[in-house]
Length: 477
Image 1 (tube, rainbow, N blue to C red):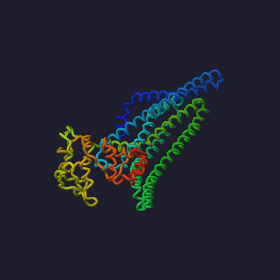
Image 2: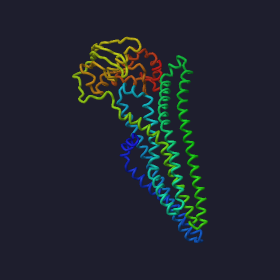
Image 3: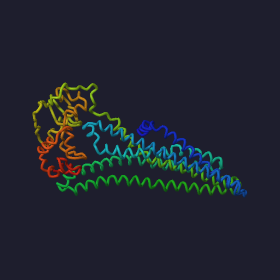
Image 4: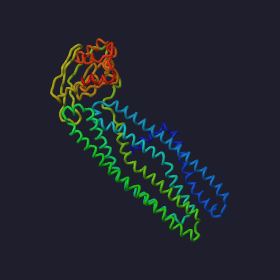
């Protein structure tokens, strides 16, 4: 199971916290189990006999046990939360590191919206289940097994109530889980879809406004939002049913204990304190089963999320760094395409076929063609965002497949069609291309881009530009 593999791999650094959770929960559960027995002793040996001293002494023990139960429960929850948050942090770190190695082809295979969802919402679901599991993985079995043992110690004649009520709860939870698994899988897919719609609309907001497509995009978002709401509503209906059904079983069990136990007390077969303790133990057992059912209700979604995260972590990037990178003798700035062809995965025909040309240092080459003719694909082959299906792309006589990624970044400057501006000044953004560029060279670049007059009208002195807001204005200008 993907979820178990992920938790086993990422919980190792938190072995100390997990051990503390186990010990603290065991102490808390045992203290909880001991309280009804003390209460029964107070009723049977103190109240019924009028022994006030025994009531005070046993009551003092109950207070100490209750205090220990509270302290250990709080400490266990704290340790569980620390471990779960640490696991989530490590998962997000590894997902980001893996995605950072993806090529353009890998990004296209997954899609940006689903990668965003897998690194945020999916990890959050695993965090929540981890907290629940760490909080209940000791308490639930100890409460169930210990509650059964302690209840049998009080009275064996009423034990049949446990064998009836507990299976009923388990059957109800099993039916609900079977309904939730496909719903949660559908929900994650629809969360991906709405993330994709929002990302496209935010990215293309200027185009949407320019072509007056606001109503169309609003309707498109409404459809994606309605799809998520529809699945969420169906999930909510299942969750809403679970609480009343389990409470009905618990109240029915309580009524049965009082009815049949009252007859046994009347017949002298058990004490009133034992009846009270048995009822408390039965409720503890059912509460433990209910806690387990809550965790079981969250498991289907976490299992789906773990599978999606595992797919990203196991995916090997289509473009790997060369085992023995080659460094060209000197930097000349020569680019050569040698019989290059490229076909997108799943495409019937290549977008580029048998392309050969050479660009010498200082030479300017224009690539002209209609939309979809492969201009952007050809450019993306130079910095090795894609790998040619056939042929070679060479920089200074060395195939880019043999160059280290850092070497390619140092030698190739790519200006994409979409503008990307970072926080800072216009000068700092321009110097991303060359850190040692002088102010005169920056103004020359602005003049070529026909932005010099626009920037000059907003300088604050000595050629320094206003900060982040100006950078966005330059992009729009």
